[in-house]
Image (cartoon, rainbow, N blue to C red; front, top):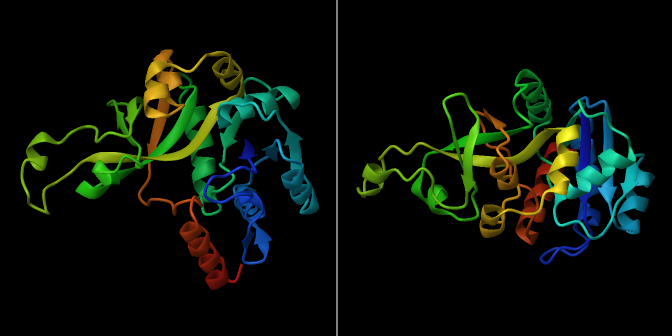
Length: 251
């Protein structure tokens, strides 16, 4: 299993986000430490910024410099796979550079899940939604799967729409929908193919790059997990929450 961590300097709400201090270490190092705990065979930080590269090399990480013109994180992965000559059959996990609290065991589980499903080109994860607020939140990506656990569709809309349950105001009404977790395992050879495809209409509409995979008829296997991982760092409030977590744990 290879883990590639895409890291960009630009961020609207948190400029220079990968280099922001998190209890004595830059955020990107916290993410790298998380990847190390997974037992991956190789870990690479992929960036287009010399400042991030310098910080990563300072704490001993392998760095691959990439183009600043990539449209998505997956396109950046494709460049790394090509530059490092990663074999087509190898499994590559995409760990976002702002996810320092992603469970290390989940990275390994997704890599193993993909190996167990030869018809899938990707593996990802989900967690059950039980409340209306989460179901209706467009910032929460939902996934619907088939009987064998393969993804049918991802959306920011509330899918599937529980018609009867939503018709009642009862707070105890049962809802069965699934929150998509943005962690992916790929077959390296597939990433090369993916990067050659232009964005598809549903992907552009929803701003969800995984829809490009389904648009081309490929399969994504989805692992349901019992606990939702803690959110990554998108806002100053997220940054403070993560800082407090590491201070509390003494890590």
